[in-house]
Length: 306
Image (tube, rainbow, N blue to C red; front, side, top):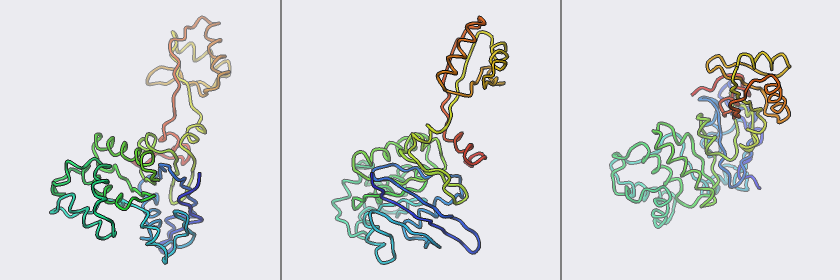
């Protein structure tokens, strides 16, 4: 699988302050790449550099097979759609009229409008004035504008920000469908780690301007050791028994259940055998999957700023 975005030692400084430090992004073609990090980590600045809106202090950017320069920026951006921060629109104009203006600015055939309205599921709302749209509909209008011109790459900055749960679900389903149905690669930034867990195929985690992790989402979970939750007929006695046997076990004070710090089959089997031999019944055994929030905490040593 080729890379549609590659950055090498990408750096941005404002005065003496380094906002982005030696960033090496690799975004695979056809992926939904979740660009994760707390507020202020440098996600928006990075995306603006990719679009040529902010000039890097150092490093290089390669997008859609070409190195991004001031000379070829517009040519590369013809194949790139973006929705950075909040969508821009003319409130007194209808949805379709807003898209007609974007077509003229992009030099795109207005026949494209029907196609993008179909993609973002807005055909029935295209004749309403944009000022009367809900926040979710405004986000869809911005996404429709970004899709005009049939881009190969889409950059979305916090696209679910401010949406209600139903709007978040709709936006998530829409984003997930784009690579599958239309072959569009998506770089989507978010501080909502749980959202990326349900949407992304690949992730990059940024903290204080530095990339601290980058891999397929499955690899992120695979490299994070899970745990097992046990419920027995006598949890305090089982805890004392397993602790004495050298098992990495803890007793959850809130629920009273046992937490075994492993998912290895051999250790789980030994745990079950010890309980059976001491006539303690095992009522429930459940694998605890680490969330992205837990993983972020392990990587950075601090809670996520939500």
